Each structure stands twice: as structure tokens, then as C-alpha cells.
Length: 226
Ligand code: ADP
Ligand code: ADP
Image (cartoon, rainbow, N blue to C red; front, side, top):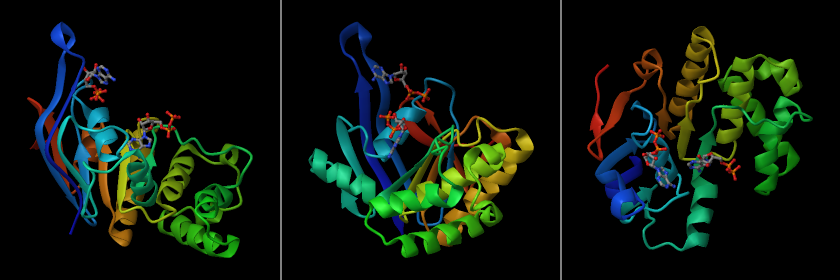
């Protein structure tokens, strides 16, 4: 089942002598439970691809489909609504709220979405369990290691059961050993929850642990071997 589909997507910036063609007829499908690594040099268009996939930006032409919903004809409100209900985002830096515990950080987006405290906490604990950080539930971010913080941030991104998880250098801030641990935890989560994941990374060792590696070439998304 395809959760994220980009079809003939075209995205450029500027015009005239400032024209930058980033994507030209780019195609990409990410299936439920699939983790795709996006590896490309700086400036190649990784952020653009993630922004388009997360409906933060629109292509000039082409179609982006999330869980079967075509987004090209949606207005801003429709796109925002679809993004909020289907996309989770993991940042390079965790952006956890320092005054709240790990559990509270993961429960918060669920409370905002209208869940009861009890429902939210049950779901949060489930996620902390999957990611191997359940023993840290009542710790505040400052009391956690970098790898633990990032796993809590992944739990938060997954809190409302997004069908698509996007991440830009999710381990960019971590040492190699911790990066491996966090990436494996993310992979376990994707498999357990059947989400589709697109992960931009510079780390080739990590990319090799993904189900598939893609890169950007001549405005296209192409398969890549490392
Ligand atoms: P990456 O994430 O791989 O470093 P980006 O997607 O950020 O690449 O950028 C791809 C290209 O598009 C770069 O040449 C960048 O300068 C250009 N670009 C990105 N966003 C904009 C923008 N808002 N306006 C003009 N050019 C942009
Ligand atoms: P702000 O830039 O207003 O603080 P956010 O913290 O939500 O907004 O996002 C920061 C950056 O994270 C965005 O510019 C974008 O690069 C990325 N991002 C956040 N959410 C998404 C998403 N759903 N899809 C794609 N990229 C996202």
C-alpha cells in the first residue's frame, strides 16, 4: 500500500537568470512499513523534496498523494488538515519542551488533537516501549542522553499515528554508535506502525540500513546503491 506518492513533480525557484530547477518530473513511492533513505549532496533538493512530501510547499506541476488523497486540488486549509492528520516530522534537533517530562512531551500533541489524558498516556507509553525509552518516561529532556532525547522526539512525531514520517538528518547531531541505535529504533517503529518513512541523511552507513536508498539526479529521484 502506497502511503506517499510523488508523480511527475516539478519544482523550481526563481526565474530568468535566477532560475533554479530542483525537481523535474520526479517520481517516488513510499509504501506502508517502508523506510526510504534520501542521500544527496547539499543543494541537491533534499529539503525541497521533504517540504513537498510534507505539504509545506506545492509543486508547480505534478501530483502528490498521501494515503490515496490527491493534494493538487486542495486549498491551504485542506492541505494543512491533511498534513496534521497524516504527517509526522522529526528534526535534526529534538525540540522537546524542556519543562515537561518525556511522557508529557509525547502526550502533548495527542491532547491537542483531542484525546483524553489517559488515552494519550497509554499511547505514549506504548511508543516509548517500542523505541526502548520507557524507563525514561518521567525524565525531563535535560536528564536524557542525546540518543534518548531523539527517540523521545521520534515518539512525539509518531504520537498521532501519522501514516507518513519525514525526517531531515534525524541523527545529524549524534555520534555514530548512538546514530545506529536511534535509526534502528526508528526502523522498528516504522515496521510496527506500518507508516511510510522518508529520511534524508548524509550518513551512508545508516542509509544502508534502510529498505531502499534514493538520490536526486537531474531533477529526478533515482535509486541509489552505496
Ligand atoms: P538540500 O536540502 O539538498 O541542501 P534544498 O532543497 O534546500 O537542497 O535546495 C535545492 C536548491 O534549491 C538549492 O540550489 C537552493 O538554493 C534552492 N532553493 C531552495 N529553496 C529556495 C527558495 N525558497 N528560493 C530560492 N531557491 C531555493
Ligand atoms: P517553523 O519553521 O515555523 O518553526 P516548524 O518548526 O514546524 O516551523 O518546522 C521547521 C522546519 O521543519 C520546516 O521549515 C521544515 O523544514 C521542516 N518541517 C516541519 N514540518 C514538516 C512537514 N510536515 N513536512 C516537511 N517538512 C517539515
